[in-house]
Length: 201
Image (cartoon, rainbow, N blue to C red; front, side):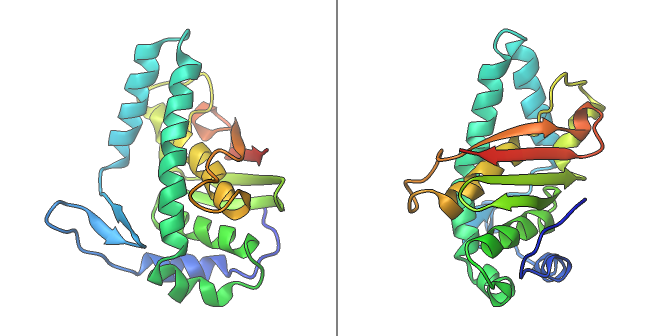
């Protein structure tokens, strides 16, 4: 997996972020990074996506895929905003930031990786125009264990990728959602060696 210049020490950031421990509240939610998280297993979300895709069939596939990606984008946009303004982000990532918003993006994906959603790394970045991500060991690739997708279907990474780019280069929060789009061009779930996600206008 390639990498580009950034002030973020990715391995160090992931190590430090991974050490932060949180306790669930009385509702089973984790107040962390300025947002509320849950601890549902990855298999739950994969089964949820699988059931929607299978139920929709080929005719409605694009509609369902769009809804799943949009749900991830909505979540990623508001969660991403909470993350980069959290005390944890400021403590671990902010001291490494040399150039904003580019290093903020690298830091946000370090959080993404530290949380176990997938090893996602920026491999190309043209400010306000394009971002290419490569992903390995992401939870959505495991959908292939119970379902053989015909198309890449890492909807969460696709939605979050464009949402993070919306935060970085779109109109000021909360009006910048859907400024950019993302296409998944490769996926481990369909036999590629890694997932690839391309964000553009």
